[in-house]
Length: 362
Image 1 (tube, rainbow, N blue to C red):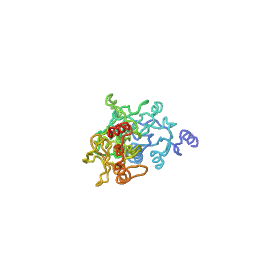
Image 2: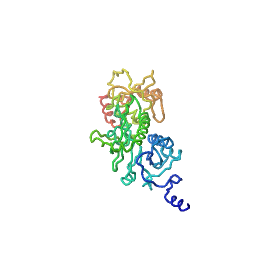
Image 3: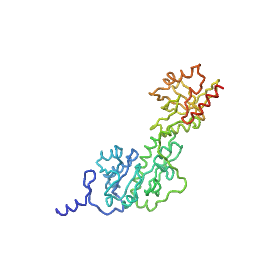
Image 4: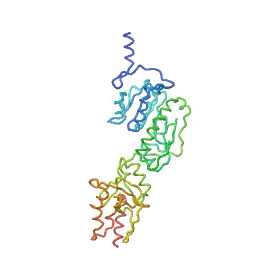
């Protein structure tokens, strides 16, 4: 008996401070031994549902372990709180321990050598209807480009490139009018988690019926960065600014410049239906009008006016505070003939503001 116990112990590997059961041959069907790769809140929804399936009767999960990136990422926090074994990236001692891998919002390209260690491959939950919006930020670009329909795709991971593997399942999702990227992410994370479990329940059949992605219609969804937050009043319509705010405003405030200083634009209220004619000069893109009744700063863009109820200039200011403390004084300095003093100026159109100033004095 001692010899048998010693042999079993030698076969076990330590994971999360606990001994893993001895290796066995891969299953041909559920419940599966899963290794989950993930990082953010979107991934947590899938991990949460997989975790709950471990104890449910007829569940698809026999065992569940997690690979997490360094730092205090949401997936690692959930795993530790729920006593799931956690591996650092890249994982070691994978071969023979798992049937299927699952990748959700992981951000690292998995090498072919690792993929081949999973008898049934590695699945990926992707929040778009692939091949549309391949890349790290599909939800943001769905909102930014005004897509009315999106969805979730379950694909098999392939080496060397992100989001190009064969499709096992897809489910459509209507994009609610006016929703933000955060709201869409919450809906798709739930839908993706359930579609993943459904795929795992009939995985062998899904793999047998998999289809390659279309060679046409592919689009790329690059990461969102602060350079995208600059509003271009001359080029962007009310609808485009609305979509930009809903796509990135919850993470990165929209920005413009005023008298050479950066201003962050907060509390977007959408299109403003106002009538404003300056008898002395044409209404320029970037012109600002304070709407006292709604305490809103209305700004002239390509095809109308959009409003914001607060800004940040050194500190956060309401629209009324900005108008009374800064804008009102500038607009009523009769000794100055520079009409650009009252404009919000697009960063890359500073030269156009200079031309406008020179033309107004000629």
